[in-house]
Image (cartoon, rainbow, N blue to C red):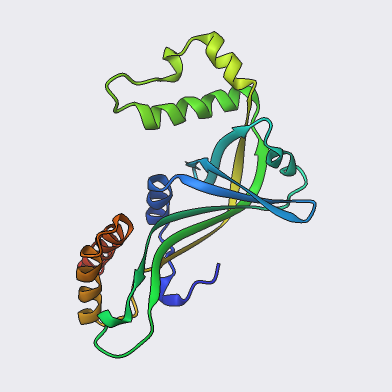
Length: 209
């Protein structure tokens, strides 16, 4: 991913928080020379100094069969994005687009059954624990679990490279930056509103530093 120096993010804690918050990612591999992709809920796990991405897909999905021969796979995560009109600048310029994105590269391997069970239990805990009637691994009937396990393949990716870009008008002056936030808040778009919030948080973070 091309990342100009203004937009490069290197803080591992910030990147981990972003991935956990935008955990529905895109897994990209190649099959017979052609790129293929699957959109999946994924988990970003840290074990000591090593990062892993874990997930699962349908057994009938041919993508998992590409893992063995693939030297690297790519996982992409995207946050809010929004069109930025150059009419919001003090000086004449051209429009652009603001966005947040993280790319993770690594080697993928298939999970064994016990690893898959542990990963699914962790996934349910993450997304169900706050609900009034949580559906957790230990509350599901063993017959239901065994049936579902036969239809999926779990995988883990040992992350070898992280690329993160937050293109949020960091190259604009303070007046332009503040006006972009104000204009995004009036766009009436959920993505624009989210981008405005992210830009406000980043300005506060930079000010506190």
